[in-house]
Length: 517
Ligand code: DHE
Image 1 (spheres, rainbow, N blue to C red):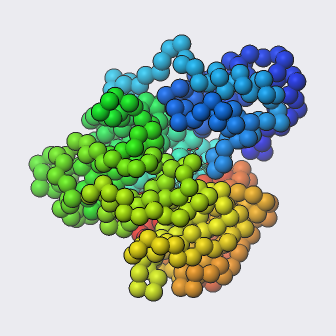
Image 2 (cartoon, protein in one colour):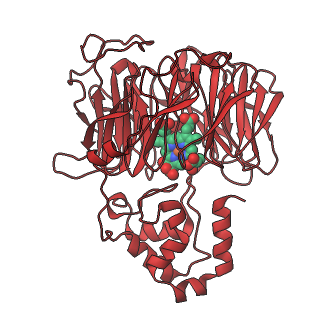
Image 3 (cartoon, protein in one colour):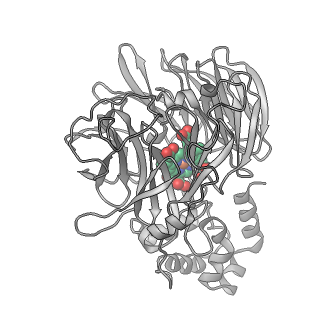
């Protein structure tokens, strides 16, 4: 039974009266919240619960989240289990600063680093016969492991334990040899896919959002919720290079929503959660002497639109907070949305101007967006986290082209340039065991699959040639189901422990249009 369900069951059995009468807020926290948010409120599977991280949440909204849960997260509703009094006390308590303010500074980061296999010390030849560019890494969130699959015959090559609660997509070096994982509690793990070994690890923060790897594979940037920072690493052995405290000119600090690599710009782009700014941080270009690497698989275009020195911050003021965002393929525009907002906005990253508003009510999941060519123009499509719909936007004028009704709100969407179909899951609601297949030419749902009745089906990833689509059965007794991407027939079913995301080396390193980056 999933942990959240166990928690709920315990709460339901305990009942509201017992919870109200017996316990103070610290005890309530220890009993109901600590498993996900950490004993010291520093975050774990759930975010840190400290005043600095709750600044955008009013006291009433804090109570509402505890009572009703939070859409599109693992946060359950405690309204039936805790009485109003207990909820008020808990909401008030998590908004108070802890006796010892948590810190995680450069010295802590340095002390956390371990390098079992320094860069260059392991053989440069894969220990397996499979095509190293068609491997899949599958994150199994049930028992915190990852599997490496051969993308041609779908045999499992290796399975290894990961840090607790990995979240977000692992990121590859451009040659596909190394993959970097990020965990919610701040660990970055570098794994050598040729030798199937963890080669370096470091803890970037206490509560991390995600990581990005520069297009030349030389630098890793980590985005943190706690502390409010970005941290730059040399990718070779994960040596920390620089901590960027994230604050505006007045000293107001912010969590980082996420950081991404923008190869055509030669920079990292970070969106901030509590400040109306986007940060752009360029990495050194090939002509600059600091880059000395044999890993340059992707030629870099010269930077455009700015002349910020390497590793310095260019601040781009934006009209609203960006909780969730997406880039056009040229990385000229960022398409962003605030979680509580009524739509999205398009911002020109060179001028910083808002060039369009997008009519996207119902929490568009922009991070899951994909694009394709449709009748001579590029369109982008995304599911909504609180609406049973997929929106399709014409990127030539940012108009809404189509809204497809689905069987429930979705989380992930996927395609491949060589596939006629886009896949979207139904992640929430009674039909969470269904997945829709959309014809990219007619913009219609042409098939709805139910691979394991009663179990959540989510997150698709294609193989290198777009011939197979792999889908997760998101359950402790789950599986990765391999479909023929053209006939939509099932080819194989590989048992796995709550497989969440799957990441194909070729599609990721080639920035394939149908997948996440
Ligand atoms: Fe995620 C990616 C944010 C909840 C599973 N999620 C991401 C990314 C961000 C993000 C910014 C992109 C990171 C990257 O790849 O570099 N996720 C958020 C949230 O803000 C949200 C809604 C609340 C939160 O808890 O932080 C959230 N995410 C979840 C879940 O509840 C999911 C379903 C289960 C889990 O593991 O926590 C979940 N998120 C994922 C996965 C990806 C992801 C599997 C990678 C998708 C990909 O294909 O790249």
